Image (tube, rainbow, N blue to C red; front, side, top):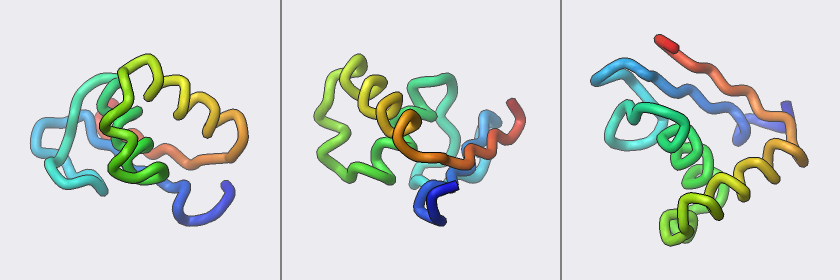
Length: 72
């Protein structure tokens, strides 16, 4: 892992804890959004879904992340 800023916990359970406000969001899009907002900031939200996915894919290719998926 490339540092504590690259540790993410995502719950797939309704009302589950998450590091992002708003709790759980289901599916791959929720995971991508959670990671993207944490690493790239609020501007990430303005990207189109394909651009979001591509940005997180590039991040995963360049850095080692720890993804903890609860209730997957």
